[in-house]
Length: 276
Image 1: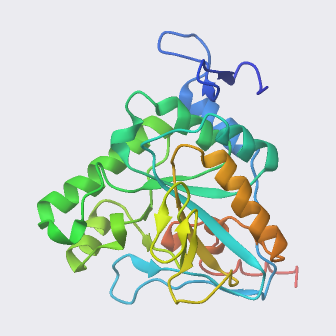
Image 2: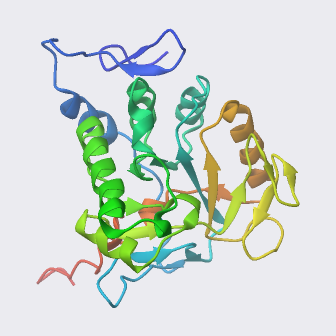
């Protein structure tokens, strides 16, 4: 069971924020801030990784893996068109860091599911309004897809997305330009995909495929998954693979500088006078 007063359990089985419009309790934003304040993910060991750098042209940087010596991988989950009522409880119980790239049209009617994910520690980042191939759209249509999705996510979950994942990994220079105008600081792609709940080319149902054609995990992999029916069992599956390979999941936002939408200061804090 989850904490009374902040979270409840809906008929579908997942936790939801209990306070509704008209309640006299703390605002949703206040509740969210207090819950998120308690969730801390491990940070990388000093000297074990290379922080991704901002793009020299001032547009959002493209990131598809993290240079690290640690045996860590980063689990990212896209879309949101189906919901697994067991998944939130699993993430909370096992304390697994993930990042959600939310297609904002799926908030309607199921906003509480992603509130629960947010409360479990997953950032809600931008995956457009309704999942088009961005490179086929003009500038105005691309800007609408990114800005309005960010508007809705900020309205619902209290924080404006700063990281964008284009559907199908498809983008162009126009995408980057309008993404910047919408407040996006980086574009996070992936180095491997777990085809949970579906079949991948050459790897079959629930297959795993690397973008470089290799096998298994590599340090700093960003792994793509999707919100699909049965996600809880599939998530247990990949967590088992990760553990067996001697790796662990880590929070990608703790490996990204603030200039790219992450949590790491872009420059180390200067030593204070008189304190070495």
